[in-house]
Image (cartoon, rainbow, N blue to C red; front, side, top):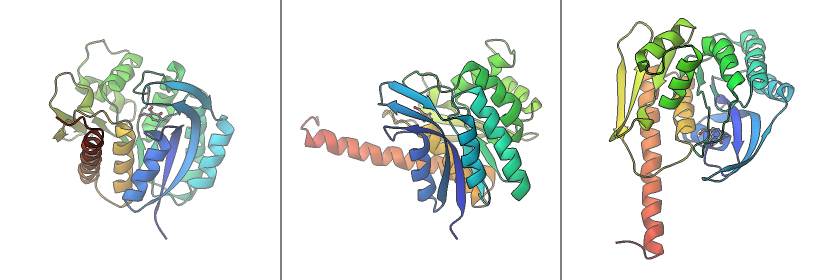
Length: 265
Ligand code: PXL
């Protein structure tokens, strides 16, 4: 039987991010994808025009139906505190009953790239209290890391390492800080903080092209690697390669499109 991944997150009507991106990533790694939809969004690359949360009990029912036998869990957009709570309770009930030690990758999605909040402020606190202690890996970008640090009461200019230490003191496992939002950076430099180990760096060339859903892709590809029994550094390395390949393919498509419309220099 094809091993399954359980992806918990939102539907992005444009198909750029969210669960459709997760499903494509799972397929690339030869896994089947079960989903628990937390919200339906209507969006383009420029704006989110509607956001409809799914009732928490329906989110919980999807997890109860899909978690059993899943080899790993990936969590993305959650929407609000009530859904975060329902997800934590449903994972507790279903996974603990069926299987101990299922890896969980938690992508703390706070905003769309177009700037709409995808988790309300209360939801962030509930995420820290209920889901963080279960996460094998947390994958914040720099703005998300800052928001987590603010919630934990760290000073505004706190170093990434200090915020990570505070998160690990609250029970987080490994933390992968994604450097794609660093100003002026020429590389996408991600740093893996494993408790009690040296920091490991993963570097990939930074692309001029802005592709939506990169965070979803990376977190889901890491979850896929863990589902297949890879170590965390191995899974991260392969996941970065998968994201880089998508950029390369999109770049080729972009070049082709501009050639076809006659705008090539
Ligand atoms: O990339 C973060 C993200 C995750 N999930 C959904 C989204 C987005 C960004 O737009 O729409 C559903």
